Length: 214
Image (cartoon, rainbow, N blue to C red):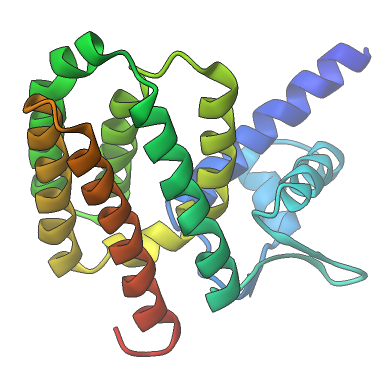
């Protein structure tokens, strides 16, 4: 049935995406479809459909007659995407319910400490995701939150490189704590400035790694 085929493709796509976000595939390498299909226990047809969907989303690259690749980090993609996410999250923060923001501020502080305590890049990225998801939970605009989610999928593989730097964890946690403190104080504009600084810091760290400086 067509429905069952779509469900299988979606399940395979989700499994492959999890691997990409965990950093299982180094950037600039080809995805071995035979090995991956065997690992997931599926045929190559739903796997190729899932990989094609991920390529359409810009998460991997489809090279004619050469298969699918995890594209190398580029200045351009990072420079274009991070400011977009920052602007969208700031807009979401400014249009969020003030009472709900005040209520979640203590939990935002707790989650910031979870980022600092994270033992590796995968755990740190998960903690960072939870923090931003909690921040966005006060925004009533579902379409805006979906736009943010789509953009974040593109940059997640970059964040794995950024958060694998131990010094980045402390810096990121401190920035998230300042945002939480500003929200608790009712200073949304300060929180937005700190949120923008958080995204721009991540962008600059990635530039260093892309260009061999970190």
